[in-house]
Amino acid sequence: MDNHLIPTYKPLPVSFKRGDGIYVWDNDDKKYLDALCGISVTSLGHNHPDVTRAINEQAGRLLHTSNLYHIDNQSKLADILCELSTMDQAFFGNSGAEANEAAIKIARLYGHQNNIDKPEIVVMQGSFHGRTMATLSATGNRKVQAGFEPLVSGFARAPYNDIDALKAIAKNNKNVVAILVEPVQGEGGIKIPDTGYLSAIRKICDENNWLMMLDEIQTGMARSGKMFAFQYEPIKPDVLTLAKALGNGIPIGACLVSGKAKNVFQPGNHGSTFGGNPFASHVAFTVCNIMKNEHLADNAQARGQQLTTLLKQKLEGNKEVVEIRNLGLLIGITLQHNCHELVTIALHNGLLINVTADNVIRLLPPLIINEQQTIEIADRLVKSINQFIQK
Image 1 (tube, rainbow, N blue to C red):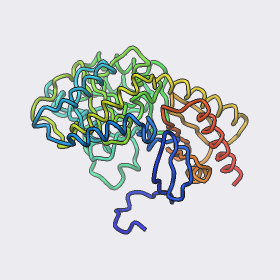
Image 2: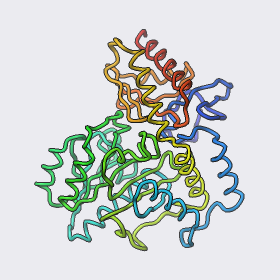
Image 3: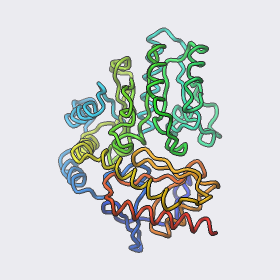
Image 4: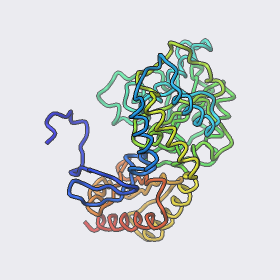
C-alpha cells in the first residue's frame, strides 16, 4: 500500500524491475511485451546499449550546471533537432507540458508584439496538451479541467479536422494569434485527420498572420512513420513541441521555432532550471542520432502497416471492432463498448497496452520491433480482445 503517495494515479497491480528491448519483467519474473512504451516514451526499447552508454558516460562527467553558462551538449542537440525538422531555434524544458507552456507564451508575446491586447489561441476539441494550468486550459477534455476552474483564458475552441470552423473563427475573431493542434490526437483516441488538414491550417495561418503551432509530443520522434508527422505534407510549422521519446525515459522537452516565431523570445522572457542540462541533452542527442542512423521512421511505417494488416485480418467480422487505424506505429482500435477492462486482460496475457477515450485500444510499440515481434503483439492482442468479448 502506497500510504505516503498522493493518489493521483490508480496503478495496476504489477511492478517492473527490469527491461530489455521490447520486453519487461515484473517482480515475479513474469515477462511482458511492452506495446505502450510508457506512453510513447521508450521508443528505442529498454536498456538500449547506446543510450545506456550515453547515460553512464555523461553521469560520470557532468550532470548539471545552469543555463547561466553555455552548454555544449544543448547546442549539439538543438543543431540535430533543427536539422531533422528544418526548424531554426530550440528551447529546452523537462516535459511536454513545459514545451507547450513555452509555445503558449510565445503566441501571447507574439500577439502583444503585433498590438493585440488580448491574444487568443485556437485549440481543438478532444485535444490534450498537458496538466499545468495553461495546458489543461488549452486541452479539449472536460475531465482534465473539472475542478480546476477558473481556467486560464485566451483559448478559442474548434472541432478537430474541421477547416470550415477555423475559417469562421478567422472571420469573426480578430484576437486570434495562433492555432495549436496535434497532427494526430493521441489521448483523444488516435484520431487521424483528413489528408491536407495541416496544409489547410498552414494556409489559414499565413492568410491571417497567425502562428501555426504543432504539438508533436506523442507523434514526433519517428513514431508516425516520419521523423515528425507534419512531414507528410509540404509544410513547416512556426512552433513545434516535443518530449516523450526525445529522451527515451530521461525527462526532456523541446519547443522549436521557425518563421514568425523565431526570435520572439529574448533573454529574460522564459527559462528552466533543469531544461537542457548537460546530462539530458547528451542522452537526447544520442536518441536523435540512433533514430536517424537506424532509419527508425521507416521501420515504424513498415511495422505499423504490418500490425494494422494483421489485426484487420484476425479481427475481420468481429462485431465488437468498429475501426482499426494507424499512422506509423500510432495505432488505435475502436470498440463498440467501454473497454478499460482490456488493459488488465492484456496484462494477464503478458502484453502492455492502453485504453483511451473509453473505447479505443492504443498501441504505441517500440520503434525497434521486428516482423516476428509484430506478429506476437497481434496474437496477444487478438487473444485479449476475444477474452474481453466472451466475458
